[in-house]
Length: 337
Image (cartoon, rainbow, N blue to C red):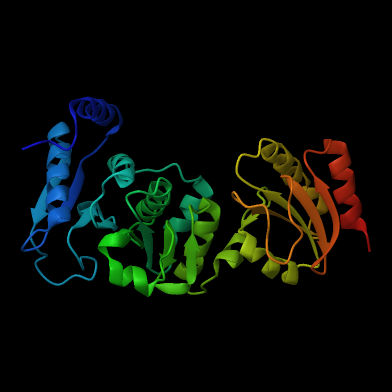
């Protein structure tokens, strides 16, 4: 039988596992009574992986011993079940998702993540169980980052968080239920109000998960409002009006793809967060490849910085201004009655 993992990749993975693995990883693979092509692929890929390192402990089942809501389809892959982790894949991890799978194996074997210590503590103290669905497609290059973020949170939660990677094309009914039109898409506790699209900011995502774990669910924007003050509040273009209505004074930096000066200007604004305090809200709007937002004047250049008061535009600066000039303009606006 032809192998899915070629010889060069086998060598690289073997070296990676030997260097990075610390403990055993149990994998429970459910393939169904009559395995479909995705189940057969999953079975072979995990058999090949387990041959590369004896610490990968593979268990293959047709079906669970008793009905389990965490095993609703085949293939279902449960990683770290014996260790108390609730890290799952609903669908075959191929193409880009294979890379995310390898990263997941590493963190489960090591039993630790690179999540900041303050967030780890909050995650470990969750009061209620929380379930995360991350919808993906194999062709999506950004999806593995979202999936692994969810898996890291699950690993740090002492079994309180269930993180499920859902292959959207293999789960059409679930995808339709949650209106999946682009990926990655995150859903918390099956709540439509929790939906976010795109790779999540770790601080925002954890804050939102914590709100569900405390029984006081927050929308994505509400969770983002809790981002530490050293970070700008990052929003999508369609979310700006909500923030303008909520805050009397707002300074927004509009960034986008291929913007060489954006990071430098953002650093200046981050440095001003403590100076302006609560007198105004400083946010970032990521335009992506677009240069317009319905209801606003076009953005011929990025970065563009706009000051708003009571939702009305009061000033606009384009490009990379000298730091003293930019700081003076924003300071003046924040102090204006």
